[in-house]
Image (cartoon, rainbow, N blue to C red; front, side, top):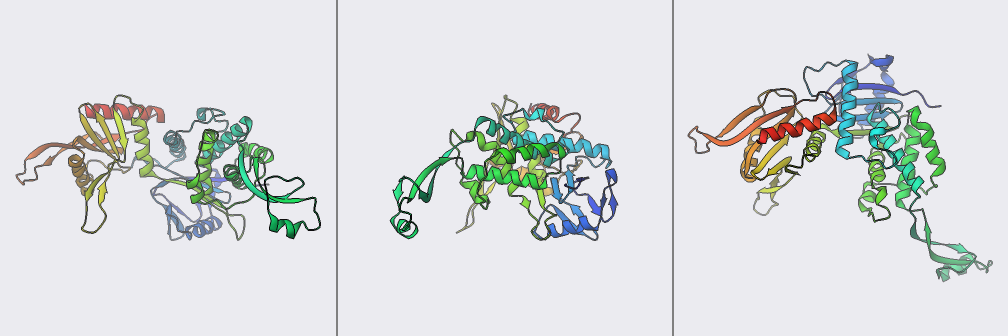
Length: 417
């Protein structure tokens, strides 16, 4: 029987020290610290080692080491109280942001009607994978042709003469052939089968255990194959296999971030961690795309500088909002600031103004500070202000992620107008 999961919730950049006590009496003891120190040796960027503890960086998500799960939550306000009620709230905010960014549309059941309570990012992705595979099994697994070699009792395909002579000299009723087989044994199912096995090994959510065991019983057994990132990159989906895309996307996330403990066998690691700056950028982008009144582009590059004999360098704003009146450039920053952005950010926005012929540019931060507007100074050195506007925008979460998305659209629309 698996040990009960111990769940620790912290905010990004927070520190955990040896023997620190958390909710439900969970203690970050020496065994847990040693496990995270060993995982750090693999070169992870999610946290740093400090004296008798660890400090998390700008990544959010979940890390499970053995039966210890640490949820790292976004922190959008310096005044945020680090109590358990705030942690639970922002745990749900993070989960809803990830669902919005990744656009989960589970086939068997809407992702807004998941069957278990998602207490962590791992619970969310595990159940989404289970739902997708349950749907594929219900619909019927896709079959493909594959080339196989072996002995048959009837001649099928092409006879392999050298193997026929060496293997069937006595059993002349057999035929060693190379032939095509039409079945479910192909790379998509190998990936899903291995992902189900990983879930069965590391899942600590009792509400999912029975469904994962049922998948192992009902899913056809597949041969073992080392799954690497290049295998995922080479996958091609057609009309028949298009329904596998979401399941494979989740499987990729799980398999490529799973680190089995080969020495002790009890401290397997799964780290589903996301750079908060990238998550914030994608969240704002998908939120703005819900507004049909303007066109939104993300990560649009333009060449900026080219050295002699070298490659050109480009600049790339996070988001460009285009209307009939012109372009508006947004750069999203997950930082806690008031009214003083870094000079590097301001110089960057100045370049965006010119290279993308923008009507306005702005830095978008989380928080509830008022809008800060400013003008760039004339480059001719007369200390005269130009009409080039660069502002600081702030948007604050209040009651739900869906309403936050609507509010972001309204705030950007108001800024444009």
